[in-house]
Image 1 (cartoon, rainbow, N blue to C red):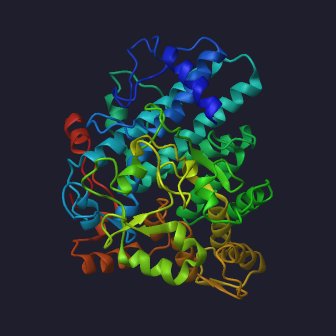
Image 2 (tube, rainbow, N blue to C red; image 1 turned 30 degrees about the horizontal axis):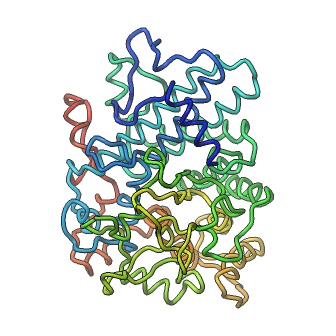
Image 3 (cartoon, rainbow, N blue to C red; image 1 turned 120 degrees about the horizontal axis):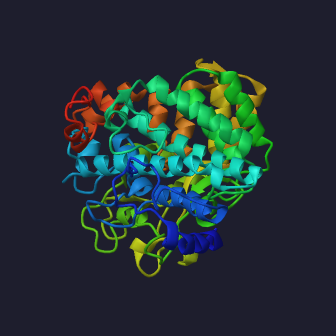
Length: 475
């Protein structure tokens, strides 16, 4: 992975696309510029790497930065019952109190970041003709469609109806940029993209798209839409035959990168300003950070203490400097590099190298149970019980499972995948978001309502559309 990152840096110095420019990067009317035209495989490979650079995001606190994945926890974990701010103040607290404004800079940055990623993927797809080798061209197509699907899947779940931009557009094509289409149309593109990715890709990569990653993501898309349960099950069982396995030690998932449990992770490299991350420094309120975000709620602590088993010690810890608060411990900066507990950071915490895990094998096993459950309330199916049991066994619970209910599966996903940006999406997919979040909000002084399940379209987009875009209800 680190060798690939170094090569990518060299290539991008010549052919890269800036993170900080217009997120849709519209080409001039001709559609052919030095920034959108690639003449050979080497140049297009740089564009492929540039997609992952877009997902990685810019390690900067500038308001114009595309922070991408580094800010995703605000929109997911902090809108669930899992995490909160340290002091319940400032723009960050809007997420935990369900009081998000249309001018929230994090929401605006994430929206722009994901469309910037989509642009980068479209750029690769538009230039596949630059590659003479058909197998390589097909692989690049699969990667680009996986990345585009990943970005759209997050956007459609967070914002609802959104613009569908499936090509590099010119400055005159503002109707495309500002026309919100039905979520069903977005899902059609996602499914089509991932189907192509499954067909075109092979396994072996972790920091780049693979067949297994596309299969797992497509299965999650099917589960999210509450359809194609049998197809989701087939996809997941194929991944289960692809050589992945649970780590024996839960802590190793996060501090031994590229391990056998990781299916797809966004790669970061420590101490390189262009390729490191600072989200883990933010969580520990370190390196001069003063606000403190993504602290563990007492609700999540209670769930982990009772049901987490040996996962609990890796999932959270007491803040060493403010002992009434609990920090997420899965991604402590540079934990793989030293420290008596294997988690403490070295050097500058804002230059951390922890990879962000998007898909891992435990998630696949629990989705396998969900696919077999097929929207029902419980199952005693042997294959479902076996998958559920593997996750429970690794957590140190050896009691034989004889039935899995919808409620027990949701709880297991919570404690297994805590603070990995799954909880909010899981609550929505399981149909429990309104009841759980309303209760959590009432207990914590928030103002949750059903319209808070979607984020606001950034106000700057509404303004730029000159009346073409309408705001989501409730904002």
